[in-house]
Image 1 (cartoon, rainbow, N blue to C red):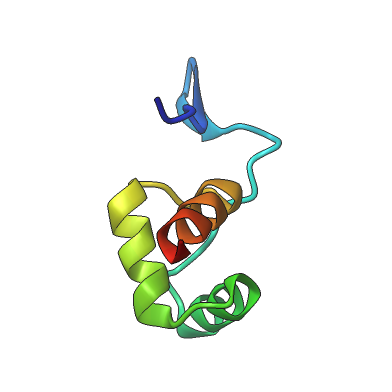
Image 2 (image 1 turned 135 degrees about the horizontal axis):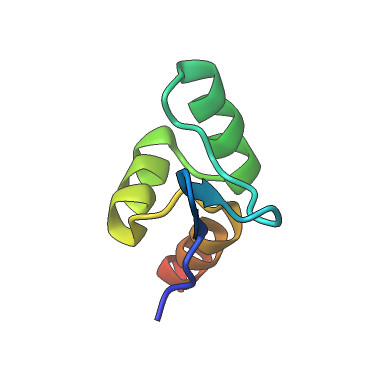
Length: 68
């Protein structure tokens, strides 16, 4: 079961404070995160689609599992 990265409050959902979220909306951000994770931009986008998550640790774990 995937951890829930968002908590409900009276105003809607907001990210948990300990979650490091990846931004893939801008090219510069995609380049940064792809380099940090050691993957191509396409592999990063594919991992986001596969995990339905923008959490750095969850994506890192997914990418490590997919390499083996």
